[in-house]
Image (cartoon, rainbow, N blue to C red; front, side, top):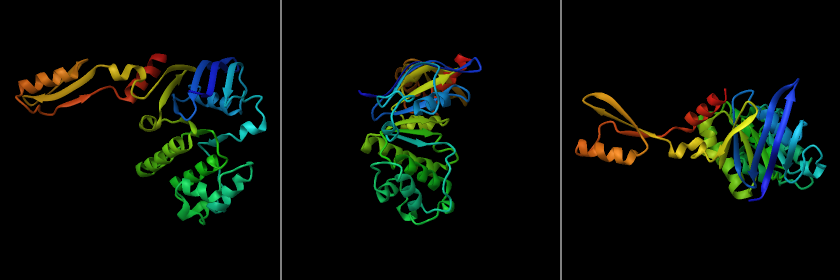
Length: 281
């Protein structure tokens, strides 16, 4: 796989205190990668260095084949940003806003195509200030993708969304990845969002990458012991086991069929994440 992002030994300190302390990271072309971590973990500093907005103290960084600190202007055309606190042009229409930002790029997508892509065709003539929060966020994405970026940075993209709006937004992100081959670096505090969208996730804490894997396998999650729960004689029972299938078969034989209140669970992504960042502390 061609790497859109390659980072080795990245370091950055503020007044002598390390914010990023030896980060190694690879993100493949077309991959959706979620970077997870608590506040102060080093996420923002790492992403700002990748975006070319902050200088590093040490290490090597290649983003779309260039060092962000020395990249030419044409490199910037391949980067799309959807910031957490994006400003908008409230008194301009959706079409006017997207057309304005399209003017910054040498070969932008057609404005109507972008508006259709983000699901705002019916609101194209509406002023941005009249849109809902979810619709405004779609305008942010339209601005982020109008220049045909190869790499899109999404910073907490669905904060404040209701469940329906979040799932609509997820569909848009999947479409960008699957149909356009856009590489996406996502930062989010929503673990279900990372699990739903990301091909791989990385956990950062204390300025160090603690683990990188698929959501299903992070931290040995897929092979972790399962918890088998059931009811017996009116009392809840539990069993932790590496062989839940055999345990369920034994219970089924004991109850001669249906096991009351049977539930089998493995550690959630949140469980694994909290274990990882808890251990780092």
